[in-house]
Amino acid sequence: MYSHFIATKVRDKVRDEVTIESSWSDDDHEEEEDIEESVESHGGGKQYLAEPMTDSIESATFRLEGGAAEFTMGTTDKELVEADGNLDFGNLSLKSMSGSGSNEVVLAMKGKGNWKLKEHTHNDVAIRLNPKPVWDLDMQVGAGKVDFDLTPFNVQKVRLKTGAAEMELKLGDKADLADVDVNAGLASIKIMVPEGVGCRITTNGALTDKKFNGFVRDGNEYETSNYNSAAKKINIKFNGGIAEWEVERY
Image (cartoon, rainbow, N blue to C red; front, side, top):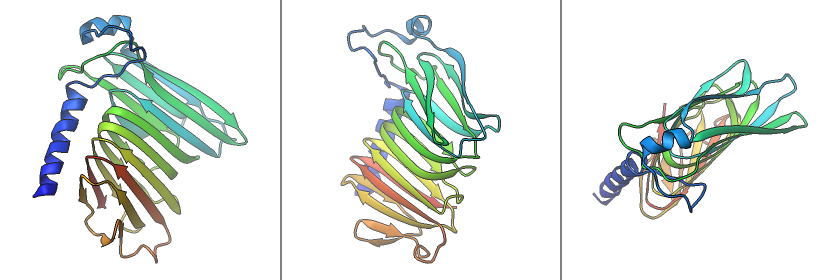
């Protein structure tokens, strides 16, 4: 009963933060503006950015520094990273650093001023990664929605830090060992893992609603029955305050 109350409060609060009053500012001295006024003076519109792929890239790190937006993930076979933005406000930037066969690409969403998202507004960002390199993902999302299907990629590390957000990650089985580290404030997070992969979950957070069906609990740890015998493993660590966490096997 108590966990259901927490989950309901988390979903309601996240929904409020994401769709009604999500905001961020690069300059605390800017006056708050209505969304209609900020479109022209603070970016917005359709934006496309890309980082080229080369044969020498064997591994890569993708960093997302996101504002108030809805983010999705897909694939590209032409570039290393592509991003399409359809924005009511803000601007996307893409920068990279490379060396020794590895690249680090940073996609950031920036803008000046504060905005209140209304239900008739949208900030949509479609991200596409090349499935050839081995990937590390480092994602920071303030208030927004994330829906990432990572099954096409060999992802070894996922670091996720979020405030008030709704997030859904679908992990694949291309990596022998994948580590997922989630640090959430007020969030609703769902992670899907393959049935054939052994999975261990470690949690640290008092006011949480946890749904880990198919896992056996041992203190703050939860394991699938095949964790020790599985050839491939996923380790998930949850750290947070008031949050709704779900891990589902598919």
